[in-house]
Image 1: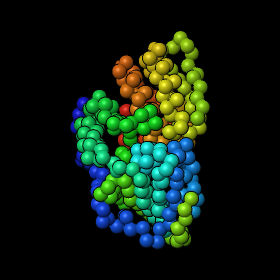
Image 2: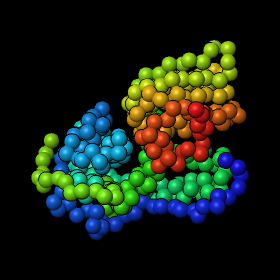
Image 3: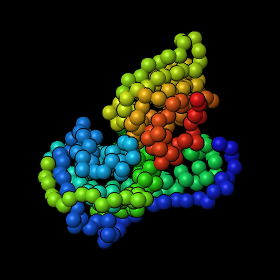
Image 4: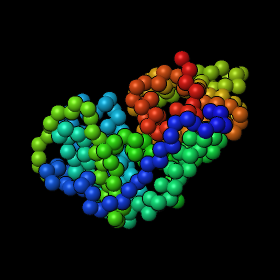
Length: 192
Length: 103
């Protein structure tokens, strides 16, 4: 990476708060509830994805992206408090949609994260490797070794139909669209 | 995830072969191991990731930390054998520019 500006346009996405966004419309979505057990995050993602068509899974990419959202809810939202639940709504008809709600205090660092991401993208755009490396991972006040600090960066790219937070910032709605997707999924609500 | 250091002890560059899931449950232990190798003398490091099919943000964070540590010593992280999904995760995370991919 040389110290020159990229010819590509600078694109800076943002985490958005929009309580009334249609991504929070849970009608006709199935749902599951989970205890806040850090050791079971990937297991929870696998359970949710059992009815998901293979064509939407893209290898393990969907499982990975869903696991990141579950991890954020259990670890940063509920702080692994076993008395707090994580609720996940899901819908695999024509596209993949999730709503994930924790019982925590909300993502207080959302605006700081948007500022971090803007500076990171600018460093990348300017091909400033030292600045980019210094900004490669987001570190919040409670970040530790199990926080890569980049899950939301990938999430903003992956959830190509949107990634929206509610006003309390403890609930996120996401959607990924696929070219040529087909209708799947039944409608029921389950508590686990 | 399992890993094995395959570089001869008298070389300044380390090489580690990884297999399994490079995820939130394994990456912190691997980071500690590899960062110790860098602190003890490696000025370059190659990760053979041909046996890794699952990479998450904690694994990406581990790769970033190793890149930062090597950059501070004037070295660079190299990666070999990236499978499709880990490559897509690195691309989504915009991390490919800071690693050197070798065949």
